[in-house]
Image (cartoon, rainbow, N blue to C red; front, side, top):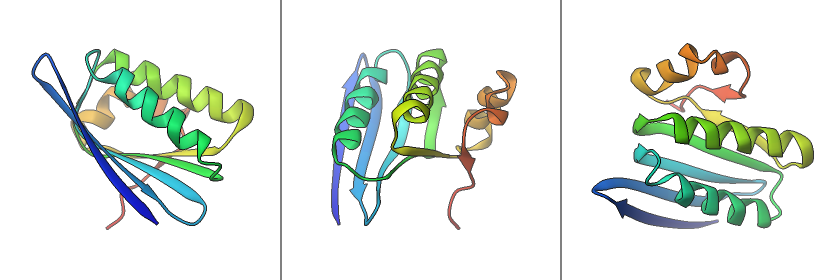
Length: 118
């Protein structure tokens, strides 16, 4: 198992992406804000995670404080790409204000959400 954390700050908007590799999965745990200024950082982290050869990719939103349409769009693109060629994707549900955005877009029914670990 290996762990790494990257802090991305653009235009005063912080996003921390912690990457952990486990047996069959890579977990990208996000904290801070996923928006237009930081979405590209997540895209690059996801590309690196896909290249790891692991069977599962987990995007953990449980510590995310804010998401805008850029972040939503990126997660939808990621889900579509994973459906087409793998690895398997799961998205850990974010706090209520973050998850509410997915509900308003009706994406809570389309994306493979999992509850945060307790």
